[in-house]
Length: 227
Image (cartoon, rainbow, N blue to C red):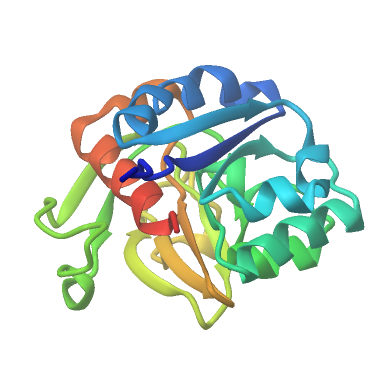
């Protein structure tokens, strides 16, 4: 009598684009975690990975860190089709919500798009929504996460599930007048067909992601999105 060991889940890490968001250094922070969680991890610096339908179908989680840049319609459709079929998609900051600015199909998939941040890093908080505090990504985390980094203003799809928000200062002159006092999503999830998508706007620099609370939130988001 023979037995077959369970196959490991597979994660694909796509990294590149604008180097200011340290795509290699930040994704490297999470590779050991994914492996410890039983994932077989593949790392790619090419968006052509989104053209390999068979490989994507066998992938349980795509972690993308690719700020700005351009993606072809074929690459976009390859990723969107894989997520619709059940592959998870997750990422942080500009690597997922400031990618491919001209591609509205991609923005629809992720559920949001970066619009603005004040020119300097600001002291601010990301605030867990009390009505979503039992969600597995944020359950048990502090209600307020203090940060000193970029504060993103994003436009989001009305269908996303907002887990946490951030509010711009009403008095800080470094905040553009149009955004003073505004509250917008900072962490959200969404469903895309059979797939799950996780987005966190936190993570401009590596030490944002090594903060204990932010790291826990991000790791949970990766696992939540994974098939």
